[in-house]
Structure formats: C-alpha cells, structure tokens
Length: 102
Image 1 (cartoon, rainbow, N blue to C red):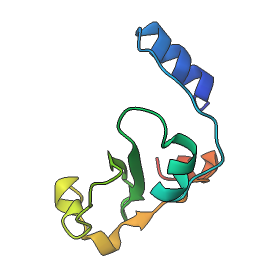
Image 2 (cartoon, rainbow, N blue to C red; image 1 turned 90 degrees about the vertical axis):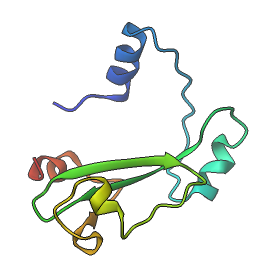
Image 3 (cartoon, rainbow, N blue to C red; image 1 turned 135 degrees about the horizontal axis):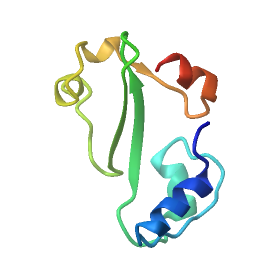
Image 4 (spheres, rainbow, N blue to C red; image 1 turned 180 degrees about the vertical axis):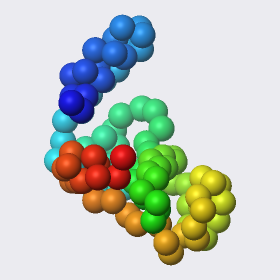
C-alpha cells in the first residue's frame, strides 16, 4: 500500500524534522507555483519525474531558477539511454501505473 501524505508527515515528525505544509491546486510551472508559495522563505524547487525504456525511474529536483541540461541529464543520473529515450511521467499518474514500472 502506498504511503499517504500523513504517513510522510508522521515519519518526518518522528525524525524531529519540522515541516510546514501549504495545500494548493497542482502547479505545472514554476510561475504557477509562485502564486501559492512565492511568499514563503526557503528554496523553491522544480521536479522532473522520468523513466527510461527499462522502467527505471528518477525524480530530479533542482532549485526553481536552475537550468537543467537535458542532453547531459542521462549521464548525470547514470541512465543507459539518451535524453530522448527518457519518458516524462505525468504528475497525476495513478498507483497502478507506478506499480507497472516496478
């Protein structure tokens, strides 16, 4: 059974890691997200959720203002494919899709 957001928050609390949660609609661009969290301190990030032809997955997280070298990314993440063989996974993938990649 997949972990829930509450499971994650409970685990962080058990590790004595303080958190603040801001619930907001999905933000598909940095600009969209800034409308909800731009006023908060700290590093704002963007995420790329990728998989290759062998169904290996990566979550790439970088500061929101950092440029990502998409051609160099496969080497950086030690992927046995060039960037164009990686697939972008949708942000609203259901658990059955994720299970298929395991």
